[in-house]
Image (cartoon, rainbow, N blue to C red; front, side, top):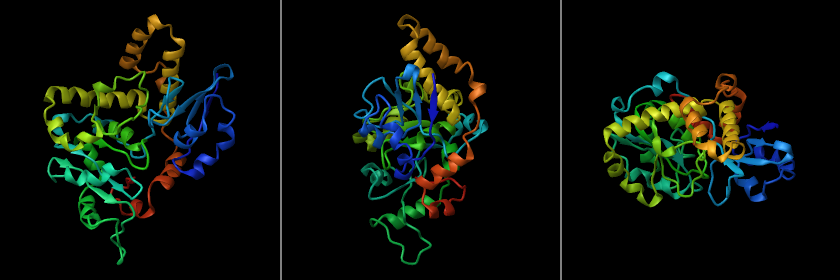
Length: 320
């Protein structure tokens, strides 16, 4: 058994590095190449199983393609994750950017924003207020920039019960891992999204999925969830991050464990083995808990965040 790892980021320059490799790997299609970032290949006896970033279910069609998360580019410590839900004053948060290429959902987030317990500023990606001739894509760019600059990504995430995951340039999102890292509960409003480790994790225990057409109903949906359930979900979100998402190496090991569970553990033992993993995590977690390399973080930041957004971020958090 061998594992090949790539830490390329989501851009054509990074992907092309692996073009020649991908064409000779079984179970890898040209379509999947363009839409699934090459992260891991599990190759027992020269048979390949593709691991892709979470994308559309139309691209990752069967259990031979196991979705992996993107690693967190903004990290939080255990103390932040341990803050209980009832001590987090923000009900729902999102802080990001939009562009003409972004999914349409982001262009409607301002309708949710109340500036109190629902804080979802979404600024125009290339809008730079420091330039005298700054122009945006629509008439809201300047106003949204003002709201955007009132918040920092890290503080907002750390004080939120729920945090919104919507499409950007694609189905994948660094934000999903970062929300878990902050101990917030992901609210996933992306239709056809393939969640990472979906055959291992019980996502209903620590996240909310909402169809895109119900986006404007989110405040009512979230307020209707009993406080006791919110508290349990928040605690579980923090646990799941530390057990399975805390570093790139741990994510790779989790993917391998999911493959082992699905393809190599006898069917009659899978339920018990899954329960054990969900409770205790990986047996060898300490051996694969190295931090994500700084070079990987830097390369991904270069591909995914405009320079002026990095410069202007008060907390150093990059915005996608």
